Length: 362
Image (cartoon, rainbow, N blue to C red; front, side):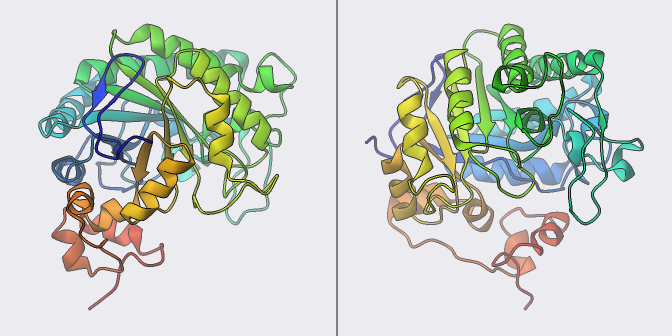
């Protein structure tokens, strides 16, 4: 297995300086019109300066009706290019590869933010507090989703990003189309796996055509049901990963939630199953409660080519540097003042209060 600090080259030709990535993190720090804020830029630049080889944005919405949370960064209009360009440049100035995660909330876009009924693969309901049943997208709207992702990828390239990641995990729009419980369509965009995966595959194809040579295009997937990601089957997810890798994805990014836990469908670790199914030259990124070097190396030993760091990187922006030096991991919770000192804004601190072990009051 490669060292965590060895370089890695993607199939497109882009190279990472190491195998540590800042995971895409909801942070609610940008402006309500989608403009990149100074707080968002400062947060991401600080992690790039801390030594991450790849730095991803939060989920950036590719259409106004795809906005899923307050303070979400947008990539749906050229008026956003100045902020996106500044963000990409600040990340790249520290030697990190800047990647924009492309996202549409679908059923997870609340009407209070988008001022309309959310749209998804189908009209469906779930037993969740505050759940708003979406309406089913028309065939023309589905084609519009593909265009929105393609245009957003082109916009990311023009802004100076080195790559994009298609967010098909966590029960957002692309993942809703993959789901057997959220995609009940009877046309070409639903039914069997070929139909349910069609939106993702067409989006990947269009995005790949829209970006220049050497530009990285990744895909993020949820292996099984977790949280909002429902109607997923482990073996289908493995097959989807195999297909996107064969269709030109530079990497597959698995959101494991906890890398120590076996799959639900059978009592084995899921990551090696994906590694066996995907062509060896296509890297796997994986995230799942990694806090220490031992954690990162254990995930690498399961088959991850690049380890994605989330909460640990919020608490410690210099996580790669500290790991390389053998320093112990920084554990939470941290006070608001301590978080502010590592470029976590007051808005982000308030969001983090919903997660155990992140914020404490003095």
